[in-house]
Length: 401
Image 1 (cartoon, rainbow, N blue to C red):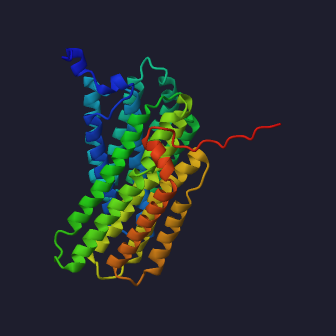
Image 2: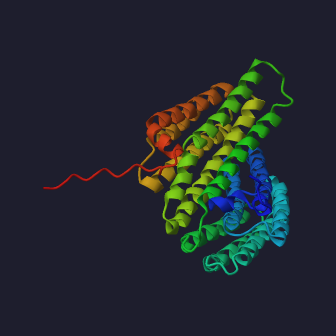
Image 3: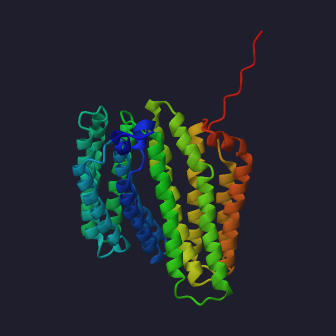
């Protein structure tokens, strides 16, 4: 049977009633994940409490900008020529923003915040314009003032120094969060598969970038047994994080969104993805910071900053499914709580261990957490992979009489 010309050019998503991630969106995401690598460099150059806070803050700004575009591309047609051109302009602005990130709290603060302003304002214009004639436009117009005020508030932060800059950017981020909570998600439609795919792709690319960062750190080191042990364990840790996310949490979040009632999807997507994936990716950043130090000095104890990055990174990464499970079915993931606690114990008790062995213990914590979760959630996993709802059925009521 020969396909018609219309069938050849029609996207598969039109047949399925679902959108698929476009190559333009992937290109845009790659630039933003480069920003994740740049945040890693920022923290690695200042592995102190101040450096961790600065990294979390600028990543919060970057994350909110990316999330704004992920929601936008979920709602509008990005394949129109004028939209493509404006999206490419936003991608260019994001690239300049990412280049400025390592010194965002130094001399590049102005360049960072002006590029950030450009990217955010363009997002609002594209979003509102793309929804012309759509019932979602009213919901976006309710959110737009927050999304315009927040980056404008951030601009003065690029022209002051020290704590004043951090305080102003924190206020800007708080306005974004407050606006999103005030809007409540009502009035927005969410295409579940496309939405979940965008966030899963961001996580997988971020994990890939952490592998690149580890590889670059290892380029000039002598090829002895400690080098091979450190590189192998660092790679295995990133692979274990991949397993910990993609084996069940990613599937469960996607299915939860799909099986939610349409009017409940937007608030659920806001919580499961926009809010709860933030610590997930921030955890990848901190783990990459620790892994880079392990690769550089495998036979020495990790510095206090390196141990903090390792413990915080694993804890934040495991937090995403803990929060998601609590949000969807009101149940606690005890395996994740135990894993977070064990990671904290390992980095505190292992202060005198060689870095390579401490990283190995951290790997053991992630593997044990994932295996315990795999065993307990085996039945739910089979249900999720079969396409059923990822939540347990309510117990049957006893018959009366």
